[in-house]
Amino acid sequence: MDLAAGDQESVKSGFSDEGQNPTNAKQPIGVRVRLFEERDIPIIRNIMRQHHAATVFRNQPFSDWKLDRHFEKILARPPRMLCAVAEWQGVPIGVTWANADAYMLSDGPLFVTVHVIAVDLEQKPLRRAKAFLSLIAGLKTWAASLNASHCVVHVTTGSNLKATDRLMKSAGAQFIGGAYVV
Image 1 (tube, rainbow, N blue to C red):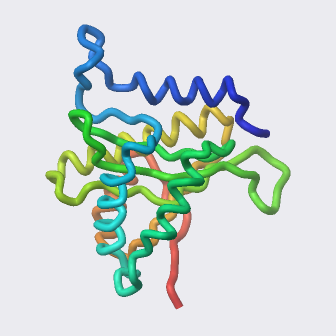
Image 2 (image 1 turned 90 degrees about the horizontal axis):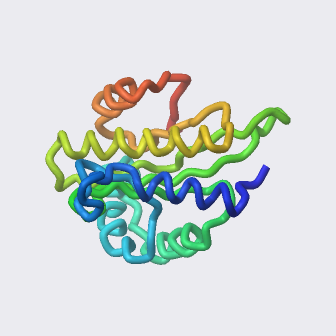
């Protein structure tokens, strides 16, 4: 089940209009979620560097080359892939990247796998939380547009897990397991 061009446009427009002030469309209210664009690359790269530095993988060198390949893939807009950006006052402050596919042991409906949710750690805690929750809301909207049965968020940072758990619960998430490093 591929996302048709028309469906892709409706998802795009859904993200583009979210959070707009109806009296002045140029002034976003709060955190706005939209699709990733090429102009976002420098800021999102910085956010991903911050994210990487806060994970258990921080001892591994950050790969600009690999991130550039991800950016190329995202900008190609493959079906069933989403990269959404949370912005505040027109500046990106968070990003999520996900794809949808069938569960490997079933012919049932699609489910969404969220590979990363990263927020700008230089933002105030409340704004970071709002960006995170806005990105989750965007993921839920996208998953619903695909009739996905589940939206699975992989938390593999190995850091600040209690705060992440609180945020996920406030977004309505249900804990179904975890990641282990051996």
